[in-house]
Image (cartoon, rainbow, N blue to C red):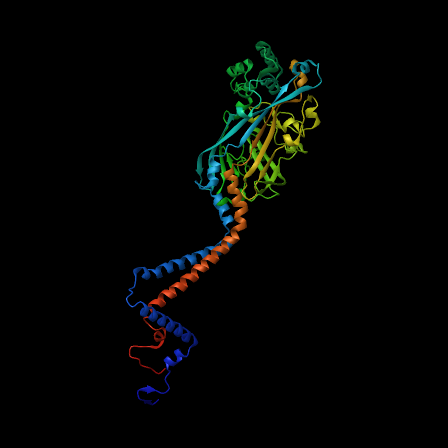
Length: 546
């Protein structure tokens, strides 16, 4: 094309194009307003110098901008990963220094043991045939505190936790109305327990045992203090047997609490961590290095996998769960089943009860688990625990032989079973698996097998003699634990939506404030370069054809 006066007639005039753009017009107007405001400020304060503090304001606005972005991001993320879920996940890790770990390692002194002894009031009369039934009288409670220690804690590479659990008893005189010096009449384990143990022994062995009984003047029933019955129950016959045949008589002190607590130390391995998941949290994986108690031949019966010591159960407990509770004194893990909701500490707990048939015989004898080989079947309502007590003929049951078949109590008088007094249950907070309270009650009975060959004891043949029963009760939770649980379980889930929204709103406000103030800060100084010029100016101010 022809060019006149150094211009192209068909060239694109960029200046006109940009100036005619609506967006540029708006920016130009804003820029002009900023310049005018800056000029007015300069005329009002002609001698004012730029302050270093003023120069640092943009940096402050940048930090405000970044804080707003962070709050917005966190607010969005908390809609996906809720604070309550994060808290429960962190609990799975059992990190040292956090409340969950500290509370577990040093459990509060909230577990009380109440011990009840059965005093036999007509033992001699029953033995001579002058009474049809053996009369027993409950004496107690004698109150102790059970102290639990968790030591030698080790975090394993496979996502498990190994520790040593030790239990000790502390007598509480301030909580006792009875004296440990009170006397009771009880079955002599050195005589009656040994005779029942020898029920299937050869005839000459029984004769020898009868001679020893007469030689030492040992009686089937003995009068002794409650303290001795608990901690120092011995007999000349027992001491002789210990010195003569230590392999057959491994212990010369048959104090009932001494037998339980003299070596109540176990090495336990439990599942933990995110890898195991909340439903396996703190379930037992190994017990003293094995998968079970090593008491029963049947692996299913002997297994303790999936059970709990009762300090804490798995998280996310459902109503249709079977919660397993392990107590070494009953020589197995017992199942608990849902029985209703209970409100405690302002939270809802699930009550899991020990079922009525816990000590019953299975309908199919081939499914019988808890039975020492060679021993006859026990009446329903009694469960053999002899492998855990030197094979002495001891059986567990509900207190007062509750739910036992009539055959088990037909020769006894003085038993008054009552579910409220003799049942067992745990009330568990379902989200955390922490028990609000729990009570485990069981009775130990001396099982007298056939007394053939023992003339003085023949009336006790095929009979269960109640010895004592124990109640372990977690009295509740310390206030600091219940308060923390209430915040975690009730308050946090109800406010976490508002927390997320608050973060979003505050973050958005910070973002807007930072943007507005940064723009104002720049506008006060004036613009060194015009926004319009940035689009169309050049050094030579030449125009080229396209």
